[in-house]
Every structure is written in structure tokens, then in C-alpha cells.
Image 1 (tube, rainbow, N blue to C red):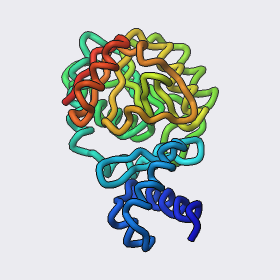
Image 2 (cartoon, rainbow, N blue to C red):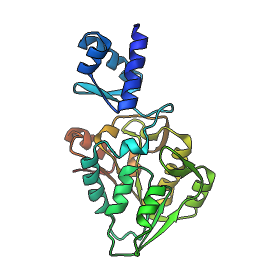
Image 3 (tube, one colour):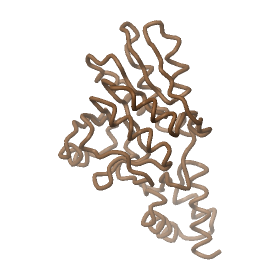
Image 4 (tube, rainbow, N blue to C red):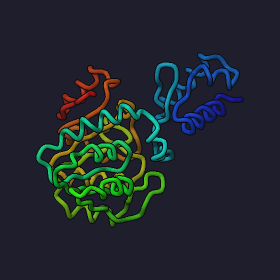
Length: 253
């Protein structure tokens, strides 16, 4: 097996399983652990993987995006903590945009049920969860539904969203970096997120530590456009401080 073939096998496994480990890859490929580490370094240099202690996980790109099902099975305790902390930032907001994705859905569920709210979302799952609350009015943005995320996109979605002035937007991303801002793999999703940023008076980004330093295909916002970033404690304090120097408060929970 050539190095190129071996790296293709590693990348395919990472995208299928959500993560790979050096020890198991070395055994599977019948090569040394150092060879696997070298392959992981190359794949990271190409922006396809992010290395961790003892392994790596895939970076979402124009050619690869995790499904909603995958997102609901990884880092769930951290996402629950993040969602609760983000919901506490609601303040006096009466109109709230909730982005597509699992963490934003958890934020919506954590919003108080004892006060009137208008929730605007492109996510079918979030809309269905929130619509049963008597105190919540849900506005579901129309458009083409993406099967991998069960959320709407394209000009129907963005034109409807452009007609609103939203008090607070809870926005997610596939990657956030100090150099490239907030990014996502799909241009259609990028347009919806960018419009949400434009339509909102206040903006909160919420995401697990693995999002940080990752760069995807389409940039839709700069870090400085957010008042708060909420993440988990696995993001090093020093790195959180570097993001805070760009403007937002960084909360680690």
C-alpha cells in the first residue's frame, strides 16, 4: 500500500467513525505508529484532519460534512453545559434566532419556558421541539431542506430572514479561527448564517473546543462580530484569552 493509499484509508475511517487512534490504525495498516503519526501530520497540513493526543478527527470541508445524527452522539455532556450557559445570556431578548445543528437545538430547549419568546429558525428539529411550548411563537424559515441537517437554505430562507431585526442570534459554525473567522462547508448554509449575523443586534457563538482552529470552506463572519463565545473547558485558557482579545467575552464551562 502506498503512502497516498494509506492516507486515503485513514481519512475515510476518520470521516466514517468520527475519530481515529494511532495504535489501532498502526495495527490495521500493519505499519509503525510513527508512520501513522507522519500520515496524520500530512493530512492535518492539508486541512483534512485535526490531530489530538493519540489520534485525530476529521475537519469538515467542501467535500465532507458530518450529519445531524453524528453531532448528537459526540461531546454530548459538553454541549449540554454549553447550551445551558448560552441560554443564560438571553437577557431581555424577545426575538431569538436559533441556528441549525445540535448545540443550537439544545440552547433552544434550555431557554426559559415561563416568558413569551419568538424563535426564528431554519432547523426543522428545533422548530418541532419549540412549537409545543405555549409561551413560544416559532417562525420556521422556508426553503430547500438539507437532508444531512434537516434545515432550510437558499434564497427563500435568506430573504425571509432579511426581513427581521432579531434581538439575539445563537449561531453555530463548523470551524472558528482567529485568522479566518467563522466558517462552514456549504455556500448555501453560509448565506443563511451570514444573514443571521446581519439581522441580529446581539450575536453569541456556541461550540465545543474541537471547532477552534478548524477552517472550513465558506467564511460568514468575523470573531469580532460576536459579543460572547461559549465553549467547554477543553479549550485552553490561553487560547480563550487570544480570542477574547478580538472582542468577544469567552465563557468556558
